[in-house]
Image 1 (tube, rainbow, N blue to C red):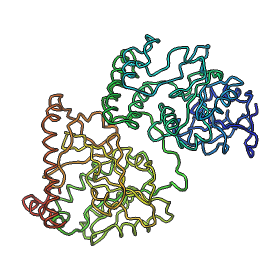
Image 2: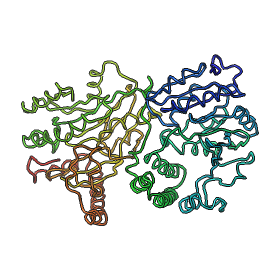
Image 3: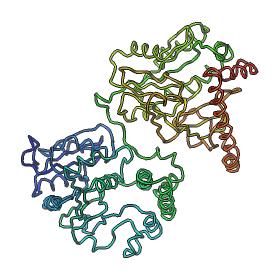
Image 4: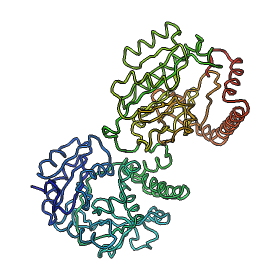
Length: 605
């Protein structure tokens, strides 16, 4: 079969984007139907890292342009890649791979697209055996979501306010405006595509991306139109089905609500969706998983998500983790970092928590630089040299404090061929990273300007076998993502003061770090709320989850101890601000120094 090759695109009325992922069983039917269409199309198949014969099948159709992403970017991510390969100034058909089009389907959709103000057109969709698929939907409303939860497919002629789907057959008998249409088959005008821009692949890996796009199209002044004269057959095989995908469908409804509505409105939508999951959960593991995850938004990062594709030349980043181990320093910490007891304790924590967590990173494209006192004991130098010989880290020895300018000079000496972006991350010598920490940081969107501070906001504070979930939007695991030219690194200021000099991006998700509280602690203390950490071991392999707190203990912590800890933290922060304002930025250090004299040198600061 032959489709129209791109050449210069002259005379081809539209482009078609097909996002494939292990779609070998479906692609031949779709591509044959496109070849038989009454309208020529320039077809772009975007392959999202398939492991089957999808690419070979697509290439077997002459004239099809195949773009391999090398990773599963999700549906919207694949569409965004395809948009860079379509013909300029023509409509774009977005087609699932498990479709077959009637010969005149694209022709009829083009006719509807020519009506004034129309930006998006969707066809009538049939199942493999000819049954009508409901493909017209209403913008999510709380009452409609409750109706879906309680009634499901029952009472198809119920009031429209109690449903989010157009269920009446009469709705599918005539051309008419709709609020949004199924994303399995859409035709988007060139003007609409230009005005709305990229599909939101950051929020929606799969599901609800078409809802978001069509909402933005309507808000840009374009009509969304259902055209029943255009018919496609949908095999419903494109993304498959699994408990994780059912849960993702439910969670993305709440993500959509959070993106476009108030926090209170989104909370109501979450409640309605939890009700639906609870009612559907019996005998359905997908809905049971959905309910479990809707109750715990911090776990949404466990759901399927787009892999970061190989960075383009302009996006490539050099990632360096930077650790102060025992550098000489002024002030109250100076004698502590040189004390034998402190060093023995720290190397034990370093080798138990920090080193294994760095070695466990799923994204290994980074360097780790550890700064040490040149006058430190020989046994410490030997331990660090052994780690350096294994390729774990690069030790750098100094007899003085090290600031941002010196860090930058050292990195320039270490990295012979810098990429456009530099990402530096602070890691203390007694803490640990989640296994996906570097991957999540490296996938952060590049800033519009020259730099931004990036924080992964959610983590765990561990005190022995008691673990506390904490959301800290400006935590010590701070990073700075910036252009190499004029770089300042993550040591440009204290971790909670970087926002004074640059924009801040605080990313939510599953716990990304483990802060270990030990000894008689002054600088760090237990924060957050007590949790059972047994489900976090795969993410944080060095966490101690051997003792599972009772439900009563967790409840008592949430109701009493956590609020008291939060109030104490606010009081300490207020006192620190007041002391700094009255006596200068060095005053808090002098206070700590006084406290430190009451503690043994082996304690933690």
